[in-house]
Amino acid sequence: MGGDQFKKRVRDERSELHADAAASARPDLRDPHVVLSLLEADQVVAAKQQTRFGRRPLSFGVRLAMWTLRIYVIVMFVIVVISVLRALHGGG
Amino acid sequence: MGASVDKSRNSAYQPAQPTTELASRSAAGRQLIGLLTHEDLDRARDRWRVARARWTGRGWKSLGGLRVLWLLMGPGVLVFLGENDAPSMLSYSADGARYGIGFFLPFVILTFVMGFIVQEMTVRLGAVTHRGHAELIFDRFGKFWGMFSTFDLMLGNFLTLVAEFIGIRAGLSFFGIRPGIAVGGALVLVLAVITTGRYWTWERITLGLAIFNGLFIPAALLAHPDWPAVGHALATWTPLPLGDRLQIALLILSTIGATVTPWMLFFQQSAVVDKGMQPRDISAGRLDTLLGTVLAAVFGIAAILATVPLFHHGINAADFEYAQFAQALVPWIGHVGAALFALGMFEAGIVAAIAISTSSAYAFGEVFGTAHSLNRPLREAWPFYVILVGSACAAAVLVLVPHAPLEFIALTVNVIAVLAMPPALFFLLLLVNDRDLMGEHANTLWQNFAGVAVTILLVCAGLAFGIATVYPRILGG
Image (cartoon, rainbow over all chains, first blue to last red; front, top):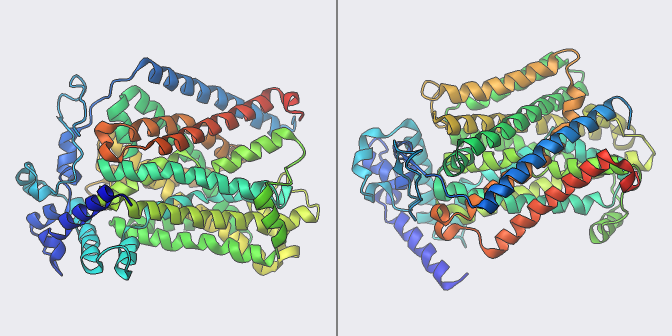
């Protein structure tokens, strides 16, 4: 493990361990502050409902690859149907 | 790590920003106090257990580390044992019965390596963004591509669900249980598991059922495998399968489809989100996925070895269906071995039915913005549960309809899964390389190399199948 990664893990664990609720043997989850101290800010349902990741710009190459793969799937589905119909009718 | 935003589409929303900051310390924390849901409370309870285990365990090199792993395992093991489903076990059985010990043993291991490479990416995506796969595709690529992706998923999921109920019916028919009772009983089990209203309980019950996938191991041992031949096959990938090239291409494709399928991507990412995993849990998520990979590979190879006696005794298994393998195996592995094999088929079907119907429900909720969590009670998330139960019921009913095209579905389900996989993988690679979303958790060069290699391999396998179908003589078939 690299030094930076190790420091990051220690930092992450310390952040969690320092949360009051984590140190408590029996946290009171009726207290919303306790609940919020255990969840990340973008993990709370209400926060997720209010936010969206926007669309990313797609380059020509990415669009071309998407269309190519889409056409590939459609053609292959047709071939599957032909293949299975042949098999079911014993046409090999 | 601010995500770029197309305001024309998302004008009603704030831009989402992945963060590892605890909600209580964030600027928006105070505004969230009155908006907490039942789902948040259950998730916080799960997070507390993990935090507490880390607090008392002091890291990974102690028993406390094992406790943390126990708490965080689930999505990875479930997705792989769920994918060791009825059609997959049928494919493995056909590999063993038609071609014996040889090429397919190491090939199955290769497919699981591919599966691990792909599924590990979904762990990172889910833990960092806290969003499901369908939601991210809609957000980042728009409705047009999102609908395509969801259509592929829903079609594949429904066909696979039907195949699971065929497996359940066939597995229990070995014991003389009538189709209606077998399928109805399985439906009741699916319903019973989701009535818990808690992700954690659902996960543990399903994991408990999934471990019975190991029934294929005693069945394989009763077949007295030729271990030196197994070692030779694993080392040399020989003997190669001989015969009708189209049938071999179909079986290769079907075997890949037994391990790498679109529903697995959607399911594991959604389950990681529902479990409440965070970026600090990614290492444990990787171990969970690795454990699932190893278990499923061992059980899959056991299914191959269990049916090898049919190959050695020249039994023609070309047209065998689920329960016929068990019946044909009675003279070679005994009634107990065959019963274990049939029970394994039933288990494979029931666990996959639970996982796949849940995958459809997660995707529906993510696409339509309705509540989608097993931590939500029925009254808060009824559309989620309606899709979950409805998809399972529809598949179960179809299996009981006389003259339904079940053979068609059983033959095609794994093949369709493989053919639908390249676009799904392309979206996955784009998402997991998106530094606006993933930040430091984006793919490395090697992870991209492995991901692209898997995608190219799947496209090539599909093209080979297509060529063998349209021009059988090109492959000498």
